[in-house]
Image 1 (cartoon, rainbow, N blue to C red):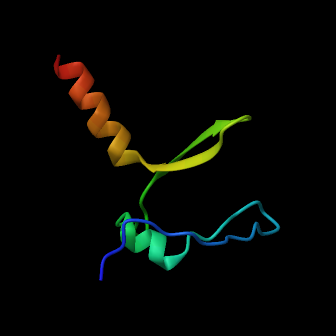
Image 2: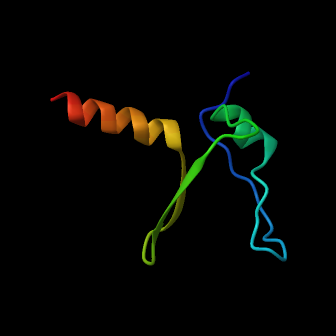
Length: 64
């Protein structure tokens, strides 16, 4: 069964790296070698977005 939501926990390693839980990687089709953009806001938190999502948005904006 495919889920629309997931909550998981990541630990930060010595080099500041995190491991994205497998459930989240499957949900967003994140694979080895994919690029992830990190969006940060001190009040709202951190968001991770696959770079192809941003590229698609940029394409849509530039087409108009």
